Image (cartoon, rainbow, N blue to C red):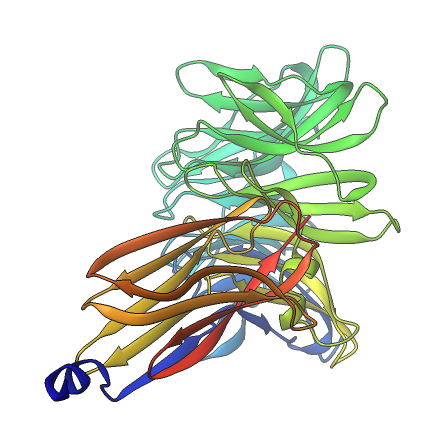
Length: 439
């Protein structure tokens, strides 16, 4: 009896880890900022911000150094639209004498003018994972816009059109071999395209309407996202694959949506969509969860009056999302960095360790409660309560769990959208983890 008590009534402490985090990036002293790119590990964000003089400048942000003004090519304004996986290469556009020019920036060389296709204007929107391939739009000698692909070895390459007079590239695969964007066809309609050196420019079609545009592509080039018109002429976010064609991702109840970025494996899409009130809201889409309003999912991170309005980029693993929102604390339109890492709780002791994970987080239809038990644990109880403290589920009561991973699944389809508390109790104490259910 004494030995049993000594074995199981051990000292322990429970650590509740909520690592979801929203960071407002501020400005360069002015009134506004927008974020358009994020590095693979979420440590570097790029975009543009107003300075104290009211000028628009490209920025590179890190938590350690804050917002760095990347300057311009010749005074005036600049904006950053993309960043390499390690955050060392930034691309965008800046004012040069008379015209706007695409640039590639590194700490060692500063802002490099990438030139044009014979005309005066150019802009860079995307960059490969290693920073060696840049894509965007540039004017040719006739003043027509053309999608381009740039490398240091070949310079700026015109990718052509779909039979019309204009095109523009917006995204590129991790290795730089697949380029996506918009090109006009012979009828003058804008069409989303996917380009490779082997097959040239492929028209990806529409959702039943006349026009479409592609904004981003997965790491291997197989998944393309953007927006397209449906048969009613409404613009809708889409996700395209060769096998499934163009899929309408819907809206948040309003009249339009646009997909702006996609994770490396193509499973997570972000962008903006209008809600029933006609307001633009940042969204995240997955096949399992559909389109979710990030303002609802991460309401607990937002101060009263703050909004996440558009999402423009996502890290390869889907963890980090950046874009533009309204920061009520500063009363400014500001760039944001959202860390969507799930919540977890750890029970630590000299003799036992239990870790609880909720997957997915947030949940729409089902949520898995995964308990990882290092050493056998007794008296384990799990209770889920709603915002009013009412018990909605009790998947475990006084259980004895042997070492290993134990997975329980809850059906939350009948639950109202909102925040729930998952309470983990053992003989030595208890703690709670937040569960978010979305509709």
